[in-house]
Image (tube, rainbow, N blue to C red; front, side, top):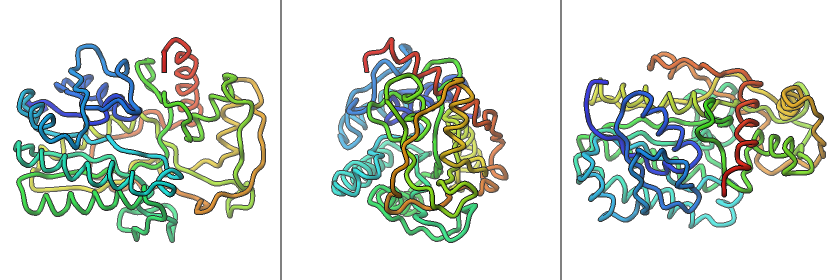
Length: 333
Protein backbone atom coordinates (compact mmCIF):
# COMPACT_ATOMS: atom_id res chain seq x y z
CA UNK A 1 0.00 0.00 0.00
CA UNK A 2 1.56 3.25 -1.14
CA UNK A 3 -0.92 5.84 0.16
CA UNK A 4 -2.89 6.27 3.34
CA UNK A 5 -6.45 7.38 2.79
CA UNK A 6 -9.88 5.86 3.28
CA UNK A 7 -11.71 3.86 0.63
CA UNK A 8 -15.44 4.53 0.37
CA UNK A 9 -17.39 1.40 -0.58
CA UNK A 10 -20.86 2.16 -1.91
CA UNK A 11 -23.23 -0.76 -1.55
CA UNK A 12 -20.83 -2.23 0.99
CA UNK A 13 -23.68 -3.96 2.85
CA UNK A 14 -24.56 -5.99 -0.25
CA UNK A 15 -23.23 -9.22 -1.69
CA UNK A 16 -20.14 -8.22 -3.67
CA UNK A 17 -19.59 -4.94 -1.83
CA UNK A 18 -19.36 -6.66 1.56
CA UNK A 19 -16.70 -8.99 0.21
CA UNK A 20 -14.77 -6.01 -1.14
CA UNK A 21 -14.88 -4.47 2.35
CA UNK A 22 -13.38 -7.67 3.77
CA UNK A 23 -10.67 -7.76 1.09
CA UNK A 24 -9.76 -4.11 1.72
CA UNK A 25 -9.57 -4.65 5.48
CA UNK A 26 -7.50 -7.79 5.00
CA UNK A 27 -5.11 -5.66 2.88
CA UNK A 28 -4.86 -2.98 5.58
CA UNK A 29 -7.06 -0.28 4.04
CA UNK A 30 -9.28 2.02 6.13
CA UNK A 31 -12.85 1.70 4.85
CA UNK A 32 -16.16 3.55 5.15
CA UNK A 33 -19.38 2.08 3.78
CA UNK A 34 -22.30 4.03 2.38
CA UNK A 35 -25.45 1.99 1.74
CA UNK A 36 -29.16 2.80 1.81
CA UNK A 37 -29.88 -0.77 3.04
CA UNK A 38 -32.67 -1.25 0.50
CA UNK A 39 -31.12 -4.58 -0.50
CA UNK A 40 -28.11 -4.66 1.83
CA UNK A 41 -27.82 -5.80 5.45
CA UNK A 42 -26.22 -3.79 8.24
CA UNK A 43 -24.89 -6.99 9.83
CA UNK A 44 -22.86 -7.64 6.67
CA UNK A 45 -20.64 -4.65 7.53
CA UNK A 46 -17.91 -5.45 10.12
CA UNK A 47 -18.42 -3.72 13.46
CA UNK A 48 -15.19 -1.75 13.14
CA UNK A 49 -16.13 -0.30 9.70
CA UNK A 50 -18.22 2.90 9.76
CA UNK A 51 -21.60 2.49 8.04
CA UNK A 52 -23.37 5.58 6.71
CA UNK A 53 -26.99 4.80 5.88
CA UNK A 54 -27.67 7.10 2.94
CA UNK A 55 -28.30 7.10 -0.77
CA UNK A 56 -25.36 7.79 -3.07
CA UNK A 57 -27.48 10.42 -4.85
CA UNK A 58 -27.61 12.44 -1.62
CA UNK A 59 -24.72 14.75 -2.45
CA UNK A 60 -24.73 16.49 0.92
CA UNK A 61 -24.38 13.26 2.90
CA UNK A 62 -21.87 11.76 0.48
CA UNK A 63 -19.64 14.84 0.47
CA UNK A 64 -19.78 15.14 4.24
CA UNK A 65 -18.73 11.50 4.55
CA UNK A 66 -15.91 11.93 2.05
CA UNK A 67 -14.59 14.92 3.95
CA UNK A 68 -14.95 13.42 7.41
CA UNK A 69 -13.18 10.18 6.50
CA UNK A 70 -10.54 11.60 4.12
CA UNK A 71 -11.79 9.46 1.26
CA UNK A 72 -9.28 9.12 -1.57
CA UNK A 73 -10.90 6.32 -3.58
CA UNK A 74 -14.40 5.02 -4.25
CA UNK A 75 -15.37 1.41 -4.95
CA UNK A 76 -18.85 1.64 -6.39
CA UNK A 77 -21.18 -1.35 -6.00
CA UNK A 78 -24.47 0.38 -5.21
CA UNK A 79 -27.18 -0.16 -7.79
CA UNK A 80 -29.92 -2.44 -9.08
CA UNK A 81 -28.90 -5.75 -10.64
CA UNK A 82 -31.90 -7.88 -11.63
CA UNK A 83 -32.03 -8.17 -15.43
CA UNK A 84 -35.73 -9.07 -15.85
CA UNK A 85 -36.71 -6.25 -13.50
CA UNK A 86 -34.68 -3.82 -15.62
CA UNK A 87 -36.79 -4.78 -18.64
CA UNK A 88 -40.03 -4.28 -16.72
CA UNK A 89 -38.93 -1.07 -14.97
CA UNK A 90 -36.16 0.55 -17.04
CA UNK A 91 -36.46 3.96 -15.43
CA UNK A 92 -35.60 2.48 -12.03
CA UNK A 93 -32.33 1.22 -13.51
CA UNK A 94 -31.44 4.47 -15.22
CA UNK A 95 -32.26 6.29 -11.98
CA UNK A 96 -30.45 3.94 -9.57
CA UNK A 97 -27.51 2.98 -11.77
CA UNK A 98 -26.87 5.83 -14.19
CA UNK A 99 -28.38 8.91 -12.55
CA UNK A 100 -27.23 8.07 -9.03
CA UNK A 101 -23.72 7.33 -10.28
CA UNK A 102 -23.59 10.73 -11.99
CA UNK A 103 -24.37 12.31 -8.61
CA UNK A 104 -21.72 10.17 -6.91
CA UNK A 105 -19.14 11.21 -9.50
CA UNK A 106 -20.02 14.87 -8.94
CA UNK A 107 -19.37 14.40 -5.23
CA UNK A 108 -16.10 12.57 -5.90
CA UNK A 109 -14.80 15.33 -8.18
CA UNK A 110 -15.90 18.05 -5.75
CA UNK A 111 -14.07 16.33 -2.89
CA UNK A 112 -10.89 15.65 -4.83
CA UNK A 113 -11.22 11.87 -4.90
CA UNK A 114 -8.52 10.58 -7.23
CA UNK A 115 -9.49 6.97 -7.90
CA UNK A 116 -12.78 5.26 -8.81
CA UNK A 117 -13.40 1.53 -9.22
CA UNK A 118 -16.68 0.57 -10.83
CA UNK A 119 -18.67 -2.64 -10.60
CA UNK A 120 -19.54 -3.20 -14.25
CA UNK A 121 -20.82 -6.31 -16.00
CA UNK A 122 -20.49 -8.68 -18.92
CA UNK A 123 -24.07 -7.63 -19.73
CA UNK A 124 -22.46 -4.64 -21.49
CA UNK A 125 -21.54 -7.06 -24.33
CA UNK A 126 -25.06 -8.37 -24.91
CA UNK A 127 -24.90 -11.50 -27.06
CA UNK A 128 -21.23 -11.69 -28.12
CA UNK A 129 -20.07 -12.56 -31.61
CA UNK A 130 -17.23 -14.71 -30.29
CA UNK A 131 -16.40 -16.58 -27.09
CA UNK A 132 -14.28 -16.06 -25.03
CA UNK A 133 -15.19 -12.36 -24.99
CA UNK A 134 -12.45 -9.74 -25.12
CA UNK A 135 -12.76 -6.23 -23.75
CA UNK A 136 -12.56 -4.77 -27.26
CA UNK A 137 -15.61 -6.78 -28.38
CA UNK A 138 -18.67 -4.83 -29.48
CA UNK A 139 -20.81 -3.58 -26.58
CA UNK A 140 -24.45 -4.15 -27.53
CA UNK A 141 -26.40 -4.65 -24.31
CA UNK A 142 -29.83 -6.23 -24.76
CA UNK A 143 -31.44 -4.99 -21.53
CA UNK A 144 -31.60 -1.74 -19.53
CA UNK A 145 -29.38 -3.20 -16.82
CA UNK A 146 -26.49 -3.68 -19.25
CA UNK A 147 -27.18 -0.33 -20.90
CA UNK A 148 -27.19 1.50 -17.57
CA UNK A 149 -23.78 0.05 -16.73
CA UNK A 150 -22.36 0.87 -20.16
CA UNK A 151 -23.60 4.45 -19.79
CA UNK A 152 -21.71 4.67 -16.51
CA UNK A 153 -18.54 3.46 -18.23
CA UNK A 154 -18.97 6.30 -20.74
CA UNK A 155 -19.41 8.81 -17.91
CA UNK A 156 -16.25 7.58 -16.22
CA UNK A 157 -14.27 7.95 -19.44
CA UNK A 158 -15.47 11.52 -19.92
CA UNK A 159 -15.00 12.52 -16.29
CA UNK A 160 -11.46 11.09 -16.23
CA UNK A 161 -10.64 13.12 -19.36
CA UNK A 162 -11.82 16.33 -17.72
CA UNK A 163 -10.72 15.93 -14.09
CA UNK A 164 -7.87 14.58 -11.95
CA UNK A 165 -9.43 11.17 -11.43
CA UNK A 166 -8.72 7.76 -12.95
CA UNK A 167 -10.89 4.69 -12.95
CA UNK A 168 -11.10 0.96 -13.43
CA UNK A 169 -14.32 -0.63 -14.70
CA UNK A 170 -14.37 -4.34 -13.90
CA UNK A 171 -16.79 -6.29 -16.08
CA UNK A 172 -17.99 -9.22 -13.99
CA UNK A 173 -19.09 -12.50 -15.44
CA UNK A 174 -21.14 -14.80 -13.14
CA UNK A 175 -20.28 -14.11 -9.52
CA UNK A 176 -20.89 -16.94 -7.04
CA UNK A 177 -19.73 -18.43 -3.77
CA UNK A 178 -19.15 -16.83 -0.39
CA UNK A 179 -16.34 -15.77 1.90
CA UNK A 180 -14.40 -18.96 2.82
CA UNK A 181 -14.23 -17.75 6.44
CA UNK A 182 -18.01 -17.44 6.58
CA UNK A 183 -18.01 -13.68 7.10
CA UNK A 184 -20.36 -12.83 4.22
CA UNK A 185 -22.26 -14.32 1.32
CA UNK A 186 -25.23 -13.90 -0.99
CA UNK A 187 -28.11 -13.11 1.37
CA UNK A 188 -30.74 -11.54 -0.88
CA UNK A 189 -34.15 -13.19 -0.77
CA UNK A 190 -35.29 -14.27 -4.23
CA UNK A 191 -31.84 -14.05 -5.80
CA UNK A 192 -31.63 -15.33 -9.37
CA UNK A 193 -27.96 -16.47 -9.48
CA UNK A 194 -27.80 -20.11 -10.59
CA UNK A 195 -25.47 -21.40 -7.86
CA UNK A 196 -27.41 -19.49 -5.19
CA UNK A 197 -30.66 -21.03 -6.45
CA UNK A 198 -29.07 -24.49 -6.51
CA UNK A 199 -27.77 -24.37 -2.94
CA UNK A 200 -31.12 -23.03 -1.77
CA UNK A 201 -32.68 -26.15 -3.29
CA UNK A 202 -29.99 -28.31 -1.69
CA UNK A 203 -30.87 -26.90 1.75
CA UNK A 204 -34.63 -27.31 1.29
CA UNK A 205 -35.47 -23.67 0.61
CA UNK A 206 -36.67 -24.57 -2.89
CA UNK A 207 -38.34 -27.74 -4.09
CA UNK A 208 -36.49 -27.89 -7.40
CA UNK A 209 -34.21 -26.13 -9.85
CA UNK A 210 -35.13 -25.11 -13.38
CA UNK A 211 -33.17 -25.76 -16.56
CA UNK A 212 -34.15 -23.02 -18.99
CA UNK A 213 -33.51 -24.57 -22.37
CA UNK A 214 -31.69 -27.70 -23.49
CA UNK A 215 -31.16 -26.73 -27.14
CA UNK A 216 -28.25 -24.34 -26.82
CA UNK A 217 -25.23 -24.73 -29.07
CA UNK A 218 -23.14 -26.22 -26.24
CA UNK A 219 -21.84 -29.74 -25.50
CA UNK A 220 -24.82 -30.72 -23.33
CA UNK A 221 -27.39 -28.29 -24.74
CA UNK A 222 -27.59 -26.03 -21.66
CA UNK A 223 -26.19 -22.53 -21.31
CA UNK A 224 -22.52 -22.14 -20.42
CA UNK A 225 -21.30 -19.38 -18.11
CA UNK A 226 -18.01 -18.30 -16.53
CA UNK A 227 -18.42 -18.49 -12.74
CA UNK A 228 -16.01 -16.45 -10.60
CA UNK A 229 -15.67 -16.82 -6.84
CA UNK A 230 -16.75 -13.63 -5.09
CA UNK A 231 -13.63 -13.55 -2.90
CA UNK A 232 -11.34 -13.76 -5.94
CA UNK A 233 -13.38 -10.94 -7.47
CA UNK A 234 -13.06 -8.83 -4.33
CA UNK A 235 -9.29 -9.27 -4.31
CA UNK A 236 -9.17 -8.12 -7.94
CA UNK A 237 -10.67 -4.80 -6.79
CA UNK A 238 -7.86 -4.30 -4.28
CA UNK A 239 -5.26 -4.96 -6.97
CA UNK A 240 -7.10 -2.56 -9.28
CA UNK A 241 -6.87 0.15 -6.63
CA UNK A 242 -3.12 -0.42 -6.32
CA UNK A 243 -2.80 -0.07 -10.11
CA UNK A 244 -4.74 3.20 -10.17
CA UNK A 245 -2.52 4.62 -7.44
CA UNK A 246 0.67 3.44 -9.16
CA UNK A 247 -0.21 5.27 -12.39
CA UNK A 248 -2.76 8.06 -11.83
CA UNK A 249 -2.75 8.84 -15.57
CA UNK A 250 -4.04 5.41 -16.59
CA UNK A 251 -7.57 4.03 -16.51
CA UNK A 252 -8.67 0.48 -17.25
CA UNK A 253 -11.55 -1.70 -18.40
CA UNK A 254 -11.04 -5.37 -17.56
CA UNK A 255 -13.04 -8.57 -17.61
CA UNK A 256 -13.34 -10.48 -14.35
CA UNK A 257 -13.72 -14.17 -15.03
CA UNK A 258 -11.71 -17.36 -15.15
CA UNK A 259 -11.79 -17.93 -18.90
CA UNK A 260 -13.54 -21.27 -18.43
CA UNK A 261 -17.26 -21.98 -18.65
CA UNK A 262 -19.57 -24.52 -17.03
CA UNK A 263 -23.02 -25.51 -18.25
CA UNK A 264 -26.18 -25.41 -16.15
CA UNK A 265 -26.13 -29.19 -15.89
CA UNK A 266 -22.45 -29.20 -14.88
CA UNK A 267 -23.25 -26.76 -12.07
CA UNK A 268 -26.12 -28.93 -10.83
CA UNK A 269 -23.90 -32.01 -11.03
CA UNK A 270 -21.28 -30.23 -8.90
CA UNK A 271 -23.94 -29.39 -6.29
CA UNK A 272 -25.01 -33.05 -6.29
CA UNK A 273 -21.40 -34.13 -5.67
CA UNK A 274 -20.78 -31.62 -2.89
CA UNK A 275 -24.05 -32.44 -1.08
CA UNK A 276 -24.19 -36.16 -1.94
CA UNK A 277 -27.80 -35.51 -2.91
CA UNK A 278 -29.69 -35.20 -6.18
CA UNK A 279 -31.36 -31.91 -7.10
CA UNK A 280 -34.83 -32.21 -8.60
CA UNK A 281 -34.44 -30.66 -12.04
CA UNK A 282 -37.31 -29.25 -14.09
CA UNK A 283 -36.89 -28.63 -17.79
CA UNK A 284 -38.38 -25.36 -19.00
CA UNK A 285 -38.26 -23.28 -22.17
CA UNK A 286 -35.43 -20.94 -23.10
CA UNK A 287 -35.57 -17.38 -21.84
CA UNK A 288 -35.40 -14.59 -24.40
CA UNK A 289 -31.92 -13.17 -24.88
CA UNK A 290 -29.95 -15.94 -23.18
CA UNK A 291 -26.69 -16.47 -25.13
CA UNK A 292 -25.43 -20.01 -25.69
CA UNK A 293 -22.18 -19.28 -23.89
CA UNK A 294 -20.68 -16.30 -22.07
CA UNK A 295 -17.06 -16.78 -21.06
CA UNK A 296 -14.41 -14.16 -20.34
CA UNK A 297 -11.13 -13.69 -22.08
CA UNK A 298 -9.22 -12.71 -18.92
CA UNK A 299 -5.89 -12.07 -20.59
CA UNK A 300 -5.98 -8.34 -19.92
CA UNK A 301 -6.50 -8.54 -16.15
CA UNK A 302 -3.82 -11.23 -15.84
CA UNK A 303 -1.40 -9.06 -17.81
CA UNK A 304 -2.24 -5.81 -16.01
CA UNK A 305 -2.60 -6.84 -12.37
CA UNK A 306 -0.73 -9.30 -10.14
CA UNK A 307 -4.14 -10.87 -9.45
CA UNK A 308 -4.32 -14.63 -9.83
CA UNK A 309 -7.42 -16.73 -9.07
CA UNK A 310 -7.17 -18.78 -5.90
CA UNK A 311 -10.61 -20.42 -5.87
CA UNK A 312 -11.22 -21.27 -9.55
CA UNK A 313 -12.66 -24.69 -8.85
CA UNK A 314 -16.40 -25.19 -9.34
CA UNK A 315 -16.82 -27.49 -6.35
CA UNK A 316 -15.00 -24.97 -4.13
CA UNK A 317 -17.37 -22.23 -5.26
CA UNK A 318 -20.37 -24.47 -4.60
CA UNK A 319 -19.08 -25.62 -1.20
CA UNK A 320 -18.55 -22.04 0.00
CA UNK A 321 -21.99 -21.00 -1.25
CA UNK A 322 -23.54 -24.00 0.48
CA UNK A 323 -21.77 -23.29 3.77
CA UNK A 324 -23.09 -19.72 3.70
CA UNK A 325 -26.62 -20.88 2.86
CA UNK A 326 -26.58 -23.11 5.92
CA UNK A 327 -25.24 -20.27 8.07
CA UNK A 328 -28.01 -17.92 6.88
CA UNK A 329 -30.47 -19.79 9.06
CA UNK A 330 -28.94 -17.89 11.99
CA UNK A 331 -29.44 -14.47 10.38
CA UNK A 332 -32.58 -12.41 10.12
CA UNK A 333 -32.64 -11.53 6.44
